[in-house]
Length: 344
Figure: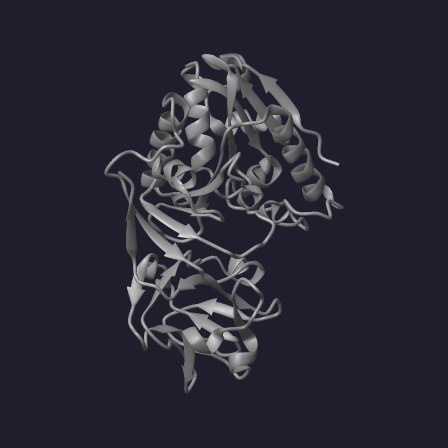
């Protein structure tokens, strides 16, 4: 079982000069608690659930180095330290042979990542935060956005600290945000592509707002949020052979254009090329909705060996990492056009 190290009001000596040095010093999962100006309130922050998504860690580390006092108590969790430290740094989503940490927040908690997720949930219960932000990066080029499982002003307001784009999902995969309640909203924030300087800046500014603003559960007057509902996932069989190339690669089940992620948060027309299929054609994939139905034919079609969009749809979270395309999904899609909700 992984041991959670706990840092209470960390000093500059404990933090070290860089996020990478800090992780090496911690060596494993760590909880950080910082006492705030208002000690009767608490907020939660989680970053590095995936070892290849460092923007949240960099933003948190930068904040801690300033030795500022947050508006209220802060409890943070940094779980996938070992994965992040696996060379090359910040390139491994999980440690070898272990489950995706952000699929472990539902029972049974019967392996190392599951037990760590259970410990994080128990500590959140102990600290009783008023809200939690779970910070991520996308594995392909993408603008910033948030994801929630409940839609109300509090959830939208939390995401708005980082982004105006919000996905409201009814998919259930065992992610931390699925533990959200109206009493304690939990949101996922995707700061943008891992390795993009803009994503680090978005993370830094959002963390600053989160830790300095007195009321983060009230959407600012006039603030507009672009909403996307009921996404589905284009999943590939676990034994599928895939490649990223400008034309079909012999022997693959799916060859994907290497710049497919240019469509992230774009509405694509019917007939847009997603990739080229091998002999298995339709058997190599499925499109899953929230109740596990395969709704492939509502979103995509096959012409010859080309995988095409059947209608105009919105695409997002497109990955250019083959291991993630296989182990998780290639992309998400939604039917609806972009629309806005305005609170005044």
